[in-house]
Image (cartoon, rainbow, N blue to C red; front, side, top):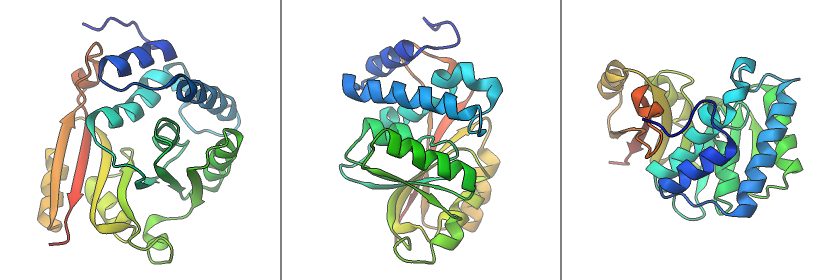
Length: 228
């Protein structure tokens, strides 16, 4: 049983993170709260997240982003591409909580990239940039070709499509972290039939004190690519 009733507050989410080994400093947390308020304000004009979901922002949007840092290790100073960032998820929380990372928030929708860049500037995040474009096109150009050892993506498409769209952006040895819900056996099977040299690491999001993600079959799928 969860100790929390929906919707979760910022304070609830911070406590869950701490309970699961993710200690976020006061200054970083204040910045995260400032960004959340900014996101809700901007969302009234530009649809970054579903307006039906705004009261669940901390629970359904921000907590899963932070959970990535609980379930996966990100090396110091890593170059990360947040593919299909939308409203800046998970790119903005990652940039705030891990100022050592270099985040490129990529999306093909002009309005979204414009407001995400405005939020980056408003928060004075020197380690993040918003880039307009399609991964499969940008990956053919410098400085983006085979640039990223780490990528993130929300469940924007089947695994096989995400692999194809990010192919030219990824280094030969790289990891693509994807948020997925529900049954994914067929997607993993389809991927294994068409792509060689990729290992699938699937983690059910089991968080101490907050069982909802696990109960609702929410996963982090990490596709680990090797050059061999």
